[in-house]
Amino acid sequence: MKPVLHVPAFEDNYIWLVRGTSTSQVALVDPGDAQPVLTALQRLALTPVAILCTHHHGDHVGGVQDLAHTFPGLPVYGPGNENISGITRPVSDGDLVILPALGLKLEVLAIPGHTRGHLAYVGHGWLFCGDTLFSAGCGRLFEGTAAQMHESLSRLAALPDSTLVYCAHEYTLANLRFARTVEPDNPDITAWTREAEALIDRQLPSIPSTIARERAVNPFLRSAHPDVRRAAELVTGHPLPDVVSVFAAIRQWKDRFRG
Image (tube, rainbow, N blue to C red; front, side):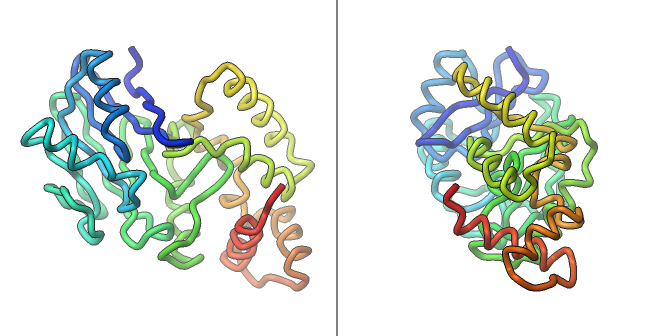
């Protein structure tokens, strides 16, 4: 059994079951719905030892209270500066989540932009980043600024290339359509599109991605690339003075993209 398992939820969410070195226990990342988690736990004979929440949106925390009720005493980690019912272990940037039963030590990173208090959990070559970084995309700016999101994404992009990116949605193909519009001549986008299509055709998730791949294909990590800047300036119709302005233009373009 893999050390990180996926549980599909809603239309396109992924809830992550992180086993680490355990054979029978898991941490639950962003359980937006309790029922598919409970079904998976029973089917795989697994017991949760913790819940990790990245941000307050309902499709990430909607199952927390039911799971906490089913498993009394289950610690629930999450951003201390967001209103999430059921959090028992509020955490913030630089904190460590230590789960001895799983042999895991995860660092908490503050990555605001999608929401004010959005967090990521990173360690053991894994990144659980909620809705901040997607494969070939990033989250909408619901509560933060373009500057905040650009800084957050830059922080994630600086992680080791081999880091596995466990985001919370299967948006890869839709994001790649936009990425290809921004950089039509990028061969890495073409290659990843073919690979992701093959995975999804086999009813397999395209996630995890890697930081190396995202640096190569994700327009939101490539604001400094001349081709991305040119595309953004063509869309806006005027020069853009810096990488944050390029990022903001690309994000606004994606918000209205229907390709």
